[in-house]
Picture (spheres, rainbow, N blue to C red):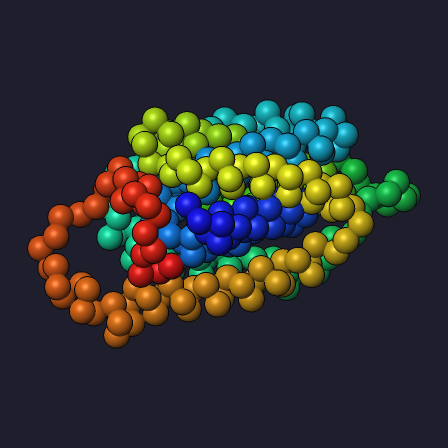
Length: 296
């Protein structure tokens, strides 16, 4: 791999690690970076999930102080996260490459719109111990509903993952009272680690990840996650999220143009009978010299 592509992978992963630790939505940076470096969309997604898992664990460790108060909430959400991650990663492994390529613009747009919606919500004040502060999570009286919602979020996370942190923050906010945003961020980070970890194991055993790109992205993302967790309490997460929203809209437009625009018609017409490309075949093609794809 040449230095330019390695720099793209490392830079995208490092920035994603920072953004995930601060606000969520970092996959909207690392995923297009992997595509720009020459990976096809489906193996790029699998490689991204594997590479960001250690970074999520690093962020979770950095938030261990906030997590010390919220084991009760974690116990409720761990099982649906585990099951959803398994189902989502299994869906990705059986999805033909051409189907995933067609779905990617919509998936990126969905994640971007979720982040946009989250940005428009009023900021939740941090609970600092005032007279009216409610500093404990108020779990709903119907835990099965929380279980179901977290399961669905986790299925999406195992399949694609972009915007999963925003989805979980929205869910946690619904029963968080005035709980500090950093405590919600800590729970979100642990659950994202579990979902990504389950998906990563499945992708590795399926041979769906790029052996060259993964260690580069993994090391850069870990560094970025530690840096992000260190500065998360000092910067305004909304500023980071607005930047990611703009990036997501631009990426959606580019992916849609590459997949459905006039330039894509000749290549689709040239091989109408070509067999569906599974994740294994897509990963093999991406590993062979990291040849640029139509999205690169």
